[in-house]
Length: 277
Image 1 (cartoon, rainbow, N blue to C red):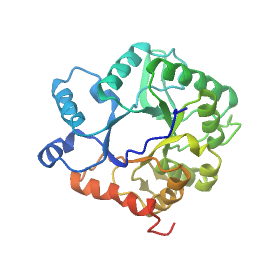
Image 2: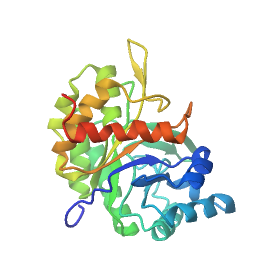
Image 3: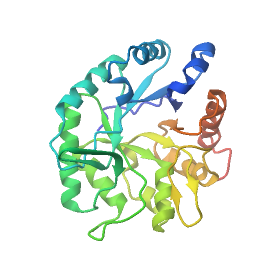
Image 4: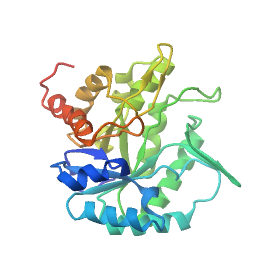
């Protein structure tokens, strides 16, 4: 659990190399950036220098995509050492990864695959999350993933599984509002039922993103503007969180940085309840 009052860094954007030139030429008055941790854990000197330039001016939070915490293989402490070194360099106030699996012995699927929602799986993930947070010595959070299919062996809804993991591990939640909406459309539940049944006091950060709506289902594509439905859901979630840092993700079909920043800034209107939800 985060000790003390949760910080609110304001509104940020996922840092993507395609925007480096725009950022370095204008130094926009953005509140903070989130980096994909793995992008800066290698030996790419150009990426390292660019990150150092960002760190001179902006707070940075780290978000991982390859931990695959629910996988059956042992915890990868070599990976965690590199992650810890990067956290020290960035002085990240917290870091996050996904509540998913994606590894088997000898294989890494590089995907965020949902877990079976069962008590024993939640307890397994919680113990691994507790060990990871203790090793990193930085507040650790897990993000809910979007899903497109369910396990026949599920014994609880996703929100109950998520709550059990974070409470037993005593970690934080990185709540992705778009993922809640996408999964609610795909599985036919009320997204507010999800929100009302997770411990909102554990939310350290909120993600927003665009998705692709095919009518019969939605895909979490991160390649277009945030939908009105997701903005309205965010307007309900933000006050329940106590007011936490909000980030816009955009990962394909990129638009100019200034346009991306304008989209992120829409969050202010919903935070101030200027737009009915």
